Length: 558
Ligand code: FAD
Image 1 (cartoon, rainbow, N blue to C red):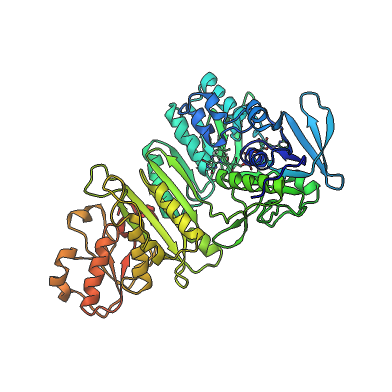
Image 2 (cartoon, helix red, strand yellow):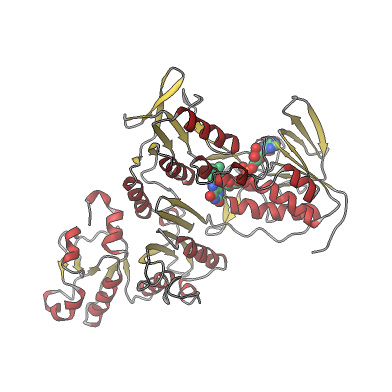
């Protein structure tokens, strides 16, 4: 990188994740640039990802959320910060923005040489009577968090309805339970955590139910019941009414594109601002980053809106440097890698789910592995469930999901790294990962998933999908007798794996066969025994009865 020192003026709109990263990187690259950041709210550079934990008192000190203050920006970085200043228009021909000082209402013009838009997104509020009542909240910034905290502490709501079972909704549910508030969770789609496949999300649903959260899935908000100026309940499309003294909406965000659109900048098909790999918009003097833009989505190589802090920070850094010295590395593709803690479990995801793959018309297959987050013989190993999704032709890994109390983060980050470099299931099988009993296994859950995928692709043991129809197939349940108590597949023949070689005569070698165990591992061993004895068409039910139960929860405990 060439050090550049010129007095160019860089104006930044929005002072949190993307904007603050852009501002400080710009300064580190160009000591003489005149850098000005406008933020319409009261705070800059606060930790929005920490807000739910502040509401629930897991983060106790409010000051911890203020990552950097305007004073620090001024002193350490020589960046002018103006809070409660809204940029109201961009005049591209004159290279000027109009700024409204919100305390006085007065408007002034600020010229720029480079402009960086980091305005984020706004929470969606359904246009319904009652949505503006003082006990209906969204959570986007510190002011929102303060309002929710005060309401909870002063009005002591007994029942809260959280609408939307995405990341923020789930974090709020967890934190409200933590401070003793009874919570209902309402979600329009039939599952929590829409980025996950349904059977993985079902594990989280079971966790929520075990914690006493009332779940209303596949049911939308039809309206709000009101009394004395407050919402008293949420009416659902099914006709049910959920009583609530407080409502928190977490139903998604809309990219803040108004400034860009009014300035004539190009918007993409997904509704975000179009940018190139240096985060330049259709006007090369104007950059855009964060929740307002469309990133290149790794698995499909098409533009997508991905409202996450990591991409916003990385994009901010690239835009800040390019605006400061006209050169920077390119923004890498984004995979939507994300994680949430829901009481005792974490759910993490990267890349394509099976349902997204179907939606994009991608040929994809998947395997499940149920393992331990570290060596099974070492005390404290916790169950970790991993789903690996791959392209059967190119063998490339397309995505992964992990759910469990420990270790989901590590596995998903490894898969995200592998995908970034175009890795295949064979590359994953060969990864050299750190191992000692307290930390992992010599054959990690990830290796096991990759081995299962290779076995599937190489016709060693093809994986039968957990939701496969087993009609007309010879299903052999190879679990122990005690394990059958929880239920089994109707019509399945029970032969424990250790008796299989002695009881082959009870089976029809010419019939398409599916082996089943608790999680898929003994089923694989059984499938290999059968193939070794002339059974031509044998599959193993991937994920076994455990995941079959999560795929068909309505059939009761498997
Ligand atoms: P923001 O960080 O929202 O900043 C935009 C700023 O621009 C705002 O402060 C806004 O007031 C200001 N602004 C807008 N228009 C103007 C204007 N015209 N003039 C002046 N200022 C303006 N992501 C994760 O990856 N992990 C998490 O755990 C996670 N948790 C989250 C929890 C919560 C409660 C929330 C709300 C978000 C969470 N996110 C998480 C998402 C993440 O915070 C966002 O993706 C990220 O902050 C986006 O950065 P941004 O710079 O685009 O927008």
